[in-house]
Image (cartoon, rainbow, N blue to C red; front, side):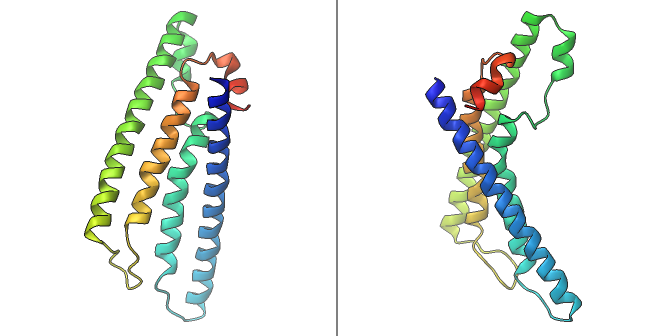
Length: 165
């Protein structure tokens, strides 16, 4: 299991780097757009492209957020419960989280396939296809599910050892 955790940890780290890069690109594009509009030129693709990058970074950054416990947790309840109950609560919330991201990955995959098969384009004058944006949802949630599997049942005192290998 340690090999699996190391593998998933590296994937989560790589996703974080990609997500950070996408956010930086989105910020640069928005700055470019503001300068162009201030100079009196129109824009047609910049805002939509920046939104695509930000949405993709959200989904691709999800596994790293889970790995580093940057997500919403039930930590307050865990501190109020006895140790054994807190472990069961943690395990239960991790399993529920895993089931939710698997469901969202499946639904995202269905939607991506539907949009791809219909050849849907955005409504802007740039009109890129919608499926690449939708594809980041099942990819990000599937990778988040892998991260959940890596952390389920890990003792919190050993979590950093298990996920930061």
